Every structure is written in C-alpha cells, then in structure tokens.
Length: 131
Image (cartoon, rainbow, N blue to C red; front, side):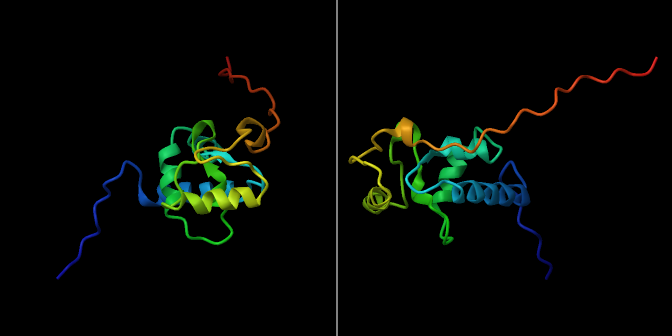
C-alpha cells in the first residue's frame, strides 16, 4: 500500500510556516525582562506585520525553554492569553517589575519594546537601461 503525503490545507507551505515560527521565537527571545511587546509588534519584527493571530497561536503552543512568551501581550497593553493561565502570566510580569492589573499592563507605552530601528540603507535609484 502506498501512502501519499497529506495535503497542505494552509495558504503557506509547511516550511514557510516553520520559518515564520522560528523568526517569531527569535524575536521573542530578544524581549528584555521588564518589557513587553504586542502580538502585532512581534509579527512585524518577524517580517509579517499582519500575522498577529499566528503569533498568538505560536505563543500558545510554545513549550521551548528560554522563550519568554509571557512578555508578549495583546494590543493596548491587555494581557491576552497565556495558555489559559493568566494568573501565571501576571505573576511572571510582576516578578520582572511590571505593574499588572487584572486585565492589563500599567504604563504600557513606557514598557513597550520594539527591536532596534535599522539604520536607513543607501538610497536606491531605478536603473535605466543603457541607451
């Protein structure tokens, strides 16, 4: 009996999705203690600014040690989810010195992290075909 490979049901091939997940985890590892980033911030830093829901799914399923998934929060400083354990997320953020209410991070704008802005590269001009 011959087995066939399962069909891809997503719009991206599995290798592209795995590459995005690896980039997301790399970005999250760079968020320093005492700072937070939104799912959208992480998605943008990983190269797909509209993939905030995918980031949430990656964080929900993340079991890798060394990935501070608790530092990734929802827009406007809301806590979002944490695998169903928001009390643990609050405790971890408080242990890092953040003030956390029942539903959000106080002073979110000051605690929001973003990867260092890249220096602008040389200005590119369109090449003209030789005449």
